[in-house]
Length: 490
Ligand code: FES
Image (cartoon, rainbow, N blue to C red; front, side, top):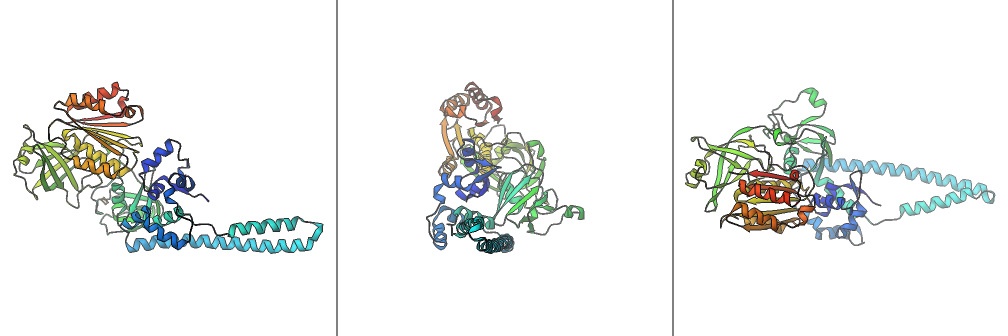
């Protein structure tokens, strides 16, 4: 008998990004009923999840050889306490079902005895009790027949113990809590923009209300929730994790760049390393108690404490790691901050004050295919957006076009290759041209024509000449202006 799963859980079970299933829903291959996917349809599309008909023990052995088994083993398990709570809850549900079944069974057996007595009493004068008895016996035989175990059910039950699925209200966003993550860590890792501040239980900004399910505390917190808040179910997302396999939380999420507050954080330099003769990788780390909240694609102003020189640099890393901030700093004659970095005077442990985030070059909500176009160090915000898109798992496909105007311009080609090898729905194209505008025209010509026809969202970052030319080329090819986001870097 078919069971119904959320798209999120179905994607976890068959091991594909959520966006791939959503694409199949849009193309009509996969039907949704009340937002749920039928296990029958899922097995039809992903038959590799169906194991041979055999005994349960044999099936479990086979699972170990399957991709699902591998994914399960690779997970970091929750703490013993959380595992015990989820198992306890699942056992309670199972016991409840068993009790109901036993009552139904007793009822049916009693009914059968009464029908048997009625049939004997009526004899040939009334055949209806005998007919009812026959039907009941046939139905019972069918119900009690041993059916093969549905492996998707088994997988779903196993996933419920090792990971919890959280739904946010009112947005409807969903994410999975894996391993020892707190609710906040899991949400940020999933690319969601929950409100938060310190990350260590002292500011109270990450308050969420538990609507359904259970949570358990993972660390002590200083922030005092009022008795009224506690009674209403409020908890700190940074200090709790899911104790039940399903959880519904009420919380506010940032919807745009305007919802992210400006912050000033004194960070320490972790590393400065050359990526190319004119490009340096700068890695800054925030204090554990003061993380930097930002949206993928945004920029920060960077300044040395003992120097007026500051520079605005796009963040090249994902907001899912809010402590480790990466930048690709280009050598520029008018940038004193960059000059000091290239001069070799900055060492690990030095402090850099960051202020921001700035900018509106962020990923719009949606499940459409994404096309990214970068020129030179415009790859920095594009990399951040790609990593964020991968966390969200909402896009069915990602395409990257990267133009270099210098011989060493593709300074992170190995990263593109790694994405392409690891991810089915990722493809990339490298182009080179001395002139950013002419390169943008060549890039537009190199893009697959079908990208202009399907409902893609385009993100373009680089020098003004590149962004403006490519935008004009895309519009000329029929892409609506609203589907193009551009970031002009100086
Ligand atoms: S983020 Fe500050 S208390 Fe949770």
